[in-house]
Amino acid sequence: MDMLELGMKLRSQISPAEREAKRKKEKQKEAWDKRPYIKYNGKIKYHTELIDCAMLCDTLLETANRCEDIMVVGFDMEWPFSYQTGPERTAVIQISPDLDNCYILHVTKLKNLPKGLSEFLAHPKVRLTGNNIKNDVRKLARDFKGFNVDRLVENCIDLGVMANSILPINQRWSLAALVEYILELKINKDKKVRMSKWHVIPLTKKQQTYAAIDAYVSLLLYQKLKERENQVFADENAVIN
Image 1 (cartoon, one colour):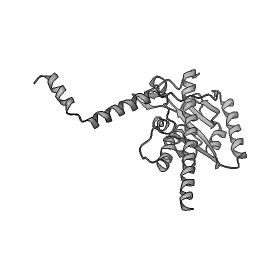
Image 2 (cartoon, rainbow, N blue to C red):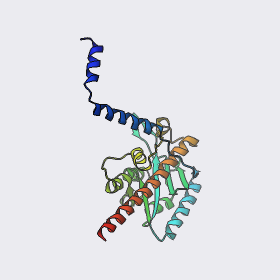
Image 3 (cartoon, rainbow, N blue to C red):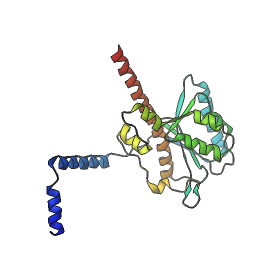
Image 4 (spheres, rainbow, N blue to C red):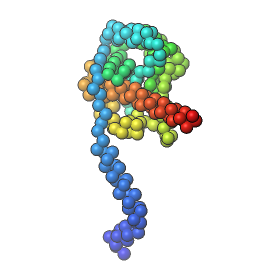
């Protein structure tokens, strides 16, 4: 029996149910490939100088002080990576206090970060949300002095952990997987940008947009998960009553 005959025989042994399952899987992949990428249409405020970063952090700190409730902010960081030496010092910090604004602090040149930033991140009314965020803030505390790492970790809301406590499935979530499952969109993780020279000033427009989307979508995912949690709670109460 030649290879052609063998292939035809194997195909003929596939059941109709298996063929239908394969067809559905291919259609699902095709539909996923057509999903649009998430976009950020808010304002990006990009700062590279200590004085500008400090003024911004003081403004955020004032906002936190005025808050009557908990202030949840999208948070993320970027740094250069070398295959020889591994991750380098934190170069960029992104903060989204709301869905319409993202603050990008390019801290490459700074020996020390503004005091207002450490006070804001450790503020009792502030919560930082992101995926795998506790490791990020631990890195920040290693890279720069002046941070109470235990307090920073206490202020973190890890999206993967939150998702596993609310969603009907449990897994090790990436930011891209959360965006796919919750928002039914894709997030652009272009390796050329993700692995780019984050320490070089100024950031390109592509880098700024990439950085802003990570912080923005972290806050958006938190809000969507919170909505689901509230709905679950309301449904459970309705059943009990």
